[in-house]
Length: 303
Image 1 (cartoon, rainbow, N blue to C red):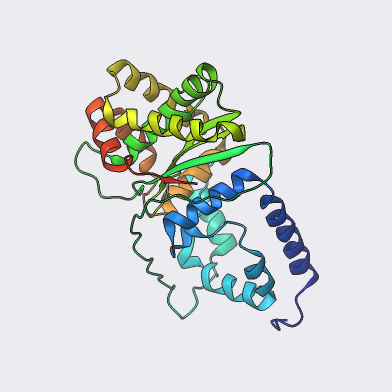
Image 2 (tube, one colour):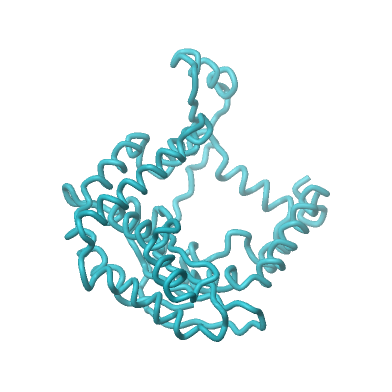
C-alpha cells in the first residue's frame, strides 16, 4: 500500500488536476506576479512557496508521502473541534467523545519546525509576457497577527485598517484615484492577509501595458501618502465602520463562525480574539495609522 512505485488511481487523478491548475496559473499575469513577489520577499521561508506546489514537487509525491504526512500531522494532539449551533455543551462533548474518544496520539512528539528569519531586501522582479494586460504589485513586509502588542496598540489592526482604506470597494482610495480619476486600472485593490509569521501588505493594479510606468508611480504615490500625511478622524471612522461591517457579514452562518473561531484557536490566538480584533480596530487612531505606515510602508518590493 505504501510503495511509492504503485500510487493509487486517486493520487494520480489529484496529481493531474493539480498540474493542470499550475499550468493555468502560469498563463495568468496576476498569478505570476503574485508568486514571484512571494519568492522575492520570503526567500527560503515556506510562505515563498506557491499553495498548489510546483510541477517538480507534485511529481515527487506518491501514496507513501501522503500517508506519512497524514500520520505526522493528522493526530488528536494537533486537533481543534469547533461546534457552533443550537446544541448544549454537554451534548457537544458527548458527540466528540463518541466519535473520537478512542483516538490515541502517536508515541512520537509532534514535529516543531523552526522557520528562518526574513531579512527585507526590497527590489524589482519582472516577467515579460505577451498579454493585453500588465499586472503590477507593490509588496511590503508587514506585522504578524501574533506579533506582541503594546497596550492599546496593534500594528496588525492598523495595517488591516490601512489595507481596507486603500483597496476595499468602489469608494477606496486606489479605486477612486487610479481608476475613476485617471483611468489607469482594469482592476485595483489591496491585500493584507492574517499570518502567523510576518505577513505581506500588497497593493496591485491591472492596466494596459502602455500605462505600466504611470501605474507603478500611481500605486507608489498612494501608499506614500499614508505616511506623508495623516488620515482625518472622519476617514478613520469611516474605514472602521466598513471593516467591522464586513467582518460581521463574514459571520452570518454557523459554518462561517465555526471556521473563523477554529482558525483563531489553531493558530494560537484563541476564540477570544474574535472580540479582541474588534476592540483593536476600534482603538486605532489617526496617529497610530501614520506611525504604522511609516514603520512598514516605505520601501516596497515591486513585481
